[in-house]
Length: 204
Image 1 (cartoon, one colour):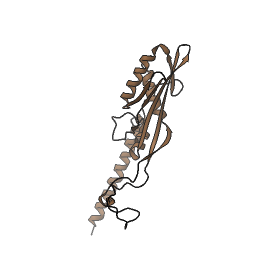
Image 2: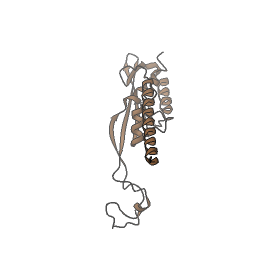
Image 3: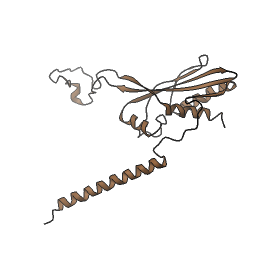
Image 4: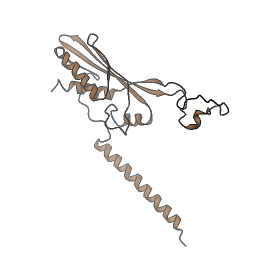
């Protein structure tokens, strides 16, 4: 007699393999078409810096603030005397938040999906002489480092994980201490994106 259970299992296995192959094909097509990659960047002079006429300082300043708000960064400090604009830290947007533009490219979005990332933007506008102003964008990226396991279940409020027999009725459900944020360098993709949006308003 034919074992129907084995036939059904084999059929399910074949369907799963076909689905995986179709998914891989779709991802390959999207990558080749550029749908999952970062959008093409406009050429920016000097990487994360650009030079603009100094007589446009006020308009460039306002444009920089608009670009930061458009990328969902809140300005924390402005000083025209120092020529600096700083933002608050912003948590990196994940693959499930495509409406937030702060994570540029599929790799950055995947990273923000798998772990906690935050960024802060600093824009410097300094006169370079001869009527030229240099606009520099710096994006610092940090990763969260938890001090220990976060107890997010009911038993964690009563029993410690490393000492099960030591009861602590005053324990608060959650992580055992404040988070630490470790610097992981800069985000050149977001730097170029912000700078190109500032530059695009003044260079045809």
